[in-house]
Length: 359
Image (tube, rainbow, N blue to C red; front, top):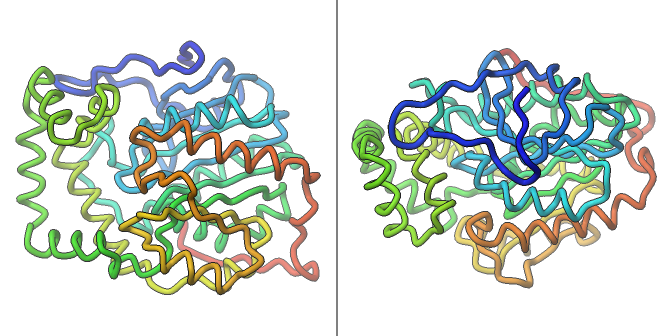
């Protein structure tokens, strides 16, 4: 299995020109893997090659802690490399980290024209969780972390697999960063996106992205930097999103988010509140301040934070280290609690929610 030096990513020529197909590995191949520190690889999840960032330094599965990261939309995990590298370096060891892309949200050799719904992405992450749990001993504490719509997906995983996870392993922290978990269609950015998708047909958006994506890298990267103000490394990642299939999938999923993410999932949050950490921004146009007030009023004893550093919703663009230090601080604090202290199902009754988990 391919490895790379600590903190680095394998070279890629996914932008501008033909893409090399790196081999896709079944999740079980991680059993013999070692030296994977911030490595990008492809894992076959739900039968689909999936871009994944992996921090797994040891070939043994005796890590006491394992963290699964679910991105926002667009769900390109390479944006999260600096952030997760900071978490890995600052949090207690041993800690294994897996960041899973959303299907067809990044241009690579396995990208297809297929469009995936929000529920499809939930099932995809559910299948990964099921597979990775089989590789770790029951003593492992599993942490979930979601950014933006990834927070909604984390709550869905808790609704569907929370009781089983608590029964078969140990559930640790579930960290929801800038969480889009209620009525995002009514937020300033949600209103803007709704109007955009109403008046800009997906076919036109796909054609525009396809035309830009066909530009040589020497033209595309300066254009991305000019339009976004991003650093060269971030612009290289963004350029991989400028492709018809990737753009259409991001818009298609966004449409589903507007229709699907409505009321707060009160039963799920109530059930797992001792494990939940919420983090809200002060200038977030996807999650306005009144949503922080609403959640704080519903759960006054919850672990609910309001950002004091004015970090933006898209913290991965230039603020990954700052957010990583915050998350590592939470882990350092909460990992002092022995595994299993708060993970026993209430009254010994296990009720597992259902979502059709077929691919």
